Image (cartoon, rainbow, N blue to C red):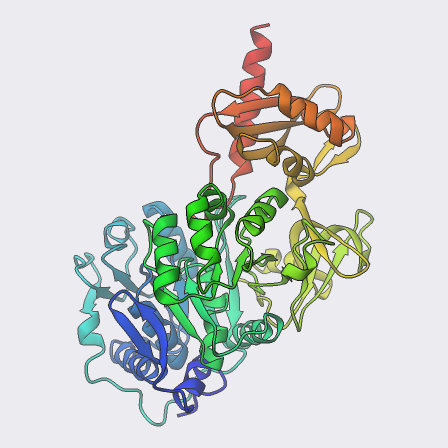
Length: 521
């Protein structure tokens, strides 16, 4: 069997190393070695083949974080089928879109996702159930325990090639229905290799896998890299994670590295009892990202946990999943930056005149062997995203002469007021530092004279005096950048299933609120 030069080979290499019988992954029901995971994945591959799954078939996977997800991930890689992760937080119509759009012929679903999957109405050739899941009507069903019993890939099986598609990652859908970024085995392996070098990973690293395995960050931020070199990944179950449970787990499992989204960091920094425990624990490194991170959040966490490196990173579902990282020793001179690129990646900006330059402000462009090969069955959108030989991200950034990148916002979020550019992230960073502000978003709303004007929407501690924000903005930024209105919300800002802010919902909300207020004057 030729299964080395593809994603499965990452695991197979460690399963044949002198550390093959060392714990590789931890789950609530115990740990699994590299060799055990490799053998289980091959059983899954053989069982799927026996159920009629063929190389190139699309297999939707809808499970919470659990051991079987790893077995399926590597099993699909060995078989040569295409993995289609489905976010378990999605509702029925959203799941149906992913399954229809990808053309998924088969589904693997667990008891966490079974109820939502039953509402999809999509016909699958085969449904594999993990745990206590009711069979889906109209589809042939097989229990996972039966799938992995006594089935093996034939010795003549030839695994997928490096350029074969392996995984379809559906994005957040912040501007409409999500589309899938197509990643080959080649791209997955380059992504993992870049992190080994760029993040100085070693076999001593013990990583806490907090993100959902259905997200690109789940497998592709450190987890596969550590699989390659013999490190350890402790996988947290999906849902219900509190900061107390997080800290308990870090102490119990001797975690050294972890990725935390900004919302968790914001909560953590309000608990000095927990940050003290983390400062005294095995934890050495925290990376945060998933959305532009207010400088105040990173600085507060770093100050609360001396001895723990707090890094800001930037990545995307189109890959690399980690494009840049700001190392702790770079924070003082480059506060607010998302850092410099990892190996095998080049960045540039497309400025307003359309020219591509290595430095300056503009749309972020990426070149890397890890980037997607296109959007699934969307040739026109793929051509736009990959034009001129670069991945065009849609993110607005500044790149300085030393290669440090600072995220300014999204191109679609740029506010042009009276012919002047207002970058929401710049305004949000100022407002986020105001005591009592828990969340902030700056959006553009129609203005009869200036075309549009910036409006700040804040979630604050109550009671709150918005004149404090007005005073800070007046002191720290030009008049055209200052919010013309400050709207206070009691409920959290809207986010999608991947916890990303939905400004497309805030713009009409703010416009309607201001229009109603004007009509009453």
